[in-house]
Image (spheres, rainbow, N blue to C red):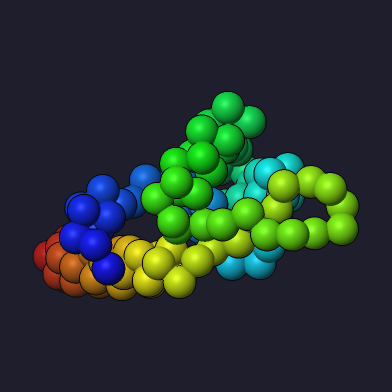
Length: 111
């Protein structure tokens, strides 16, 4: 993996993270927006401009690819590089969460 991709994508924005999660299965743009909205209980609602700008960047950087489908809509799926970065970010977020719980848990003992 190229170090510049790691530097560019770690840490990852929430919208990038959730978009990569969405395209673990092949999805077209509207399905990506629906998946992210549903998964985050509508906390994150991707607009079309945001989504398609990001999809273009992720495709250009090799994190997702356009896959063939029968519907005629552009469908996107995560690549091996994208999956590697997604796993790295998930591990980073997990460690961050553990640190927060550890510190906040200690604070609760004193209250």
